Image 1: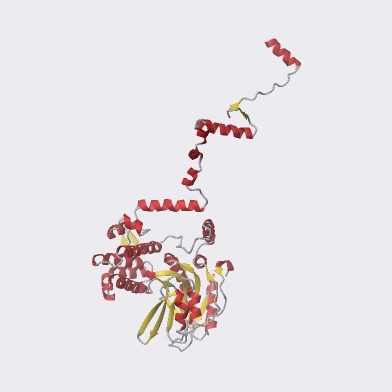
Image 2 (image 1 turned 90 degrees about the vertical axis):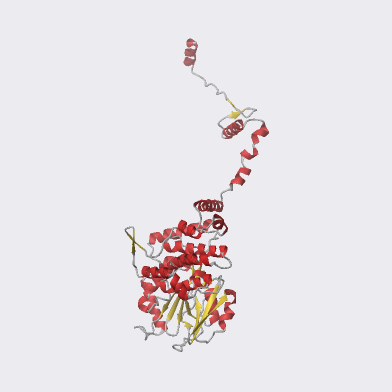
Length: 465
């Protein structure tokens, strides 16, 4: 694709676990999950990015090793603890379909032709997984707030390659894929890169290329984004998508719920508040992940926040899980004569009331959605002020400190304010040749010399006199 769309990287073929880990996660924030599978056992290790290269190299040549494509806070590989989005990906299980007789390189060519037909970008990396193919589109780090747009891209890529065996269950942000330099135990084949490492996309640009935006809207979107970046001197990092949706709303609410939990209950949620908080947090997750992933996410949240078992979570969150399943199937429910999404929907004010969030918490915890209208207005005013400062506007205090009203020069000259300003106007006129000023600075009349009159005219004046 166009070189302006990507960030150039060092080219080359990845040939080891360490190179794979560094290529995916160098410079990122959070922790990376390495998972291993043996007979009947699945184990996970959470590794800080700084320690990744050395930690994963020990898995070279070992069977059934996987690496997360994105990064997480803490040790749990769950979307609720997502630190940064790092790559889009598609896992293609073609070993049992009509493409089973193709080599990995031949199969890759077929998938690239399908992507080209839909004007979609080629992947940054293609990995032969021993029985299938993993395609990865690396992009600049994006926060969890970008998750709705990231998921939309995943859906487009998955739908485009569905006929090639795209695994519909392998699309969530917490997914792990096989680690290069290890072995697929089911086939005995090595996991290896079959392309050189491509460039890293800017996340917004990659999403623009994948999502079906009208060309005029796409051009306008890029122009506006470039304008914002120029105004802020390239200080903008990856940010949430500008397009508002129900998913972006609930992602923001989930962030506020996690801030509230950390700030109000640092030692754990007490028994009287667990159900309410987990009910709202699980509802938020139901808008961010498919039902199959929601079970794992809800179980992790319930275990971490309340110490519940999976069976207890299923029992207490049954209605949220059931509604998510119905929404996933495309069902609607009647609400006041309208067909609506069956998942729970609340207003911010309702959640504030249910959780009894105070104004002090709204301010101290920097809650963005669960804040009063007055606090939101004040923050909007502060945002506009920062934008004006970034655009070069003078702060009011500085303006007033340097203003004439502050210096009061009319007192120095011993005249009134109105007289002083009148004198300045008169001086300006003098400078432009429109008049003269007297010793006091006030305007004086300048006599206009009489023009000579013809003799007849002078006689007429004398007779009139």
